[in-house]
Image 1 (tube, rainbow over the protein chains, first blue to last red):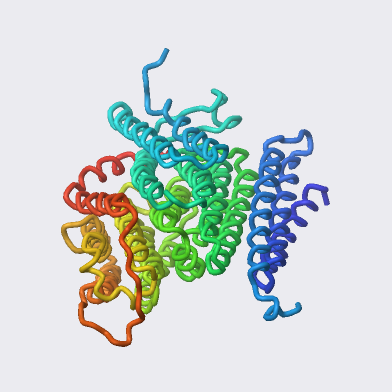
Image 2 (cartoon, each protein chain N blue to C red):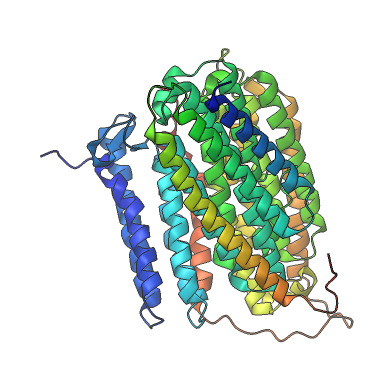
Length: 98
Length: 499
């Protein structure tokens, strides 16, 4: 088994785990984490695609991963910000411990 | 030295809103803020008009390409414009101008305007860039720019419900984009390029292409909010500030729809099947009935309009089964695509007009409850008139853009021998009449009611709020008289020669 194939399968696995997480998770924090795991799965797949020939490394998927990381960071930051603001608004008495 | 061509204007319509966003981000709150942003919107409008004129004049319906940095397709990123995208850019340009004027009046005395304008222009930049993008990964970036700025705009109200709606909107949008990104990874692996034209040239009926098409469809359906993936839309569109509600319903859902149409009919047309198109059509049909029913049951005016968007999006999805009849390959050049394009334009104008007039009614009445609208026609006759005109178009009565759109859908259904869609379209019109007449009968009801909650109606702060909504309503009417214009821009080019 080549390392590229191993990375591809792991990437697909992470994508599936993340997808399952976002459907099943109850808390927003878990959903945000699940989205990030999905994203990392795709990034791993892209890195594996970059070396599918074995002879040379294709830089285009690397550029895609870098751009993707920036976007994921921005999206996560916005989601966390909204989550924290919602949390502050909620009544402390009605807040149930998880 | 080359002569001026429409392709040279392509980078400008991407950069202009970005510059406007930067200016908005850096400037402090001042009295010229509104005028400055209207100025940006007006310049963009002029460029779009110039671009449309040049495109129709010189290109003979061939797509125009601008190579960024003159790198060319496989290495660099191309900006491409064809008939469909010039129509979407034109729609964006016109709606941006009117909604920016409305937004300037809406946020005239509001400190939130400082946060509104940069996000607003980022959203416009994302839309413009998406419609001219010829690169699969570039489209992903545009989808994310649109998704992030739209979610932030929904959160601008800072109420609990709007924050919840924004968070759900954001998460759904990110999930949809990730599905799309996964598909791009698969496409890049099998085609070795991200350029849409090159993918289209080498795409076939293979397993990777089919998996990619499924992932793209699921991801974009989440963003378009086709039933049963519509769950996030009503709250997000209803709890946003009024100009944002208008642009979300008019343009943002259409942006994802544009990408789906591009992939379905041009890039990966070999992977689509008759069965899949029928599934999309059935979901669209259910969306029409379900969305209309939920709109009828809504207690809040903006929620009603948002559910109406769910229903109206259903009509556009009838495009997919209806365009299957001609030959074996589905193309985006037949009468079904004309109907869909006309529907997109008609719905964008009518829904924007409806959201603006509803926003005015809510501002005037101080409440978004439908029950509180009783007798409002005597105080706000013009806004009720605008609401009515937009409603006439949504129901599909002549003379309005909605009538032409529905007429095209009906004739296409009969031509293609799929008569069952006729029943869906007609019953959808009936249901739309039900929920809109419910509002109108309340608005014209002047009988006194003892049980009514006391409200303090106040006059609108600016006449601009009403007049910009009125312009949109008049455009909706004018489109009903001038159907040829829209169809001529969009019809011959799309899908004829690949991309």
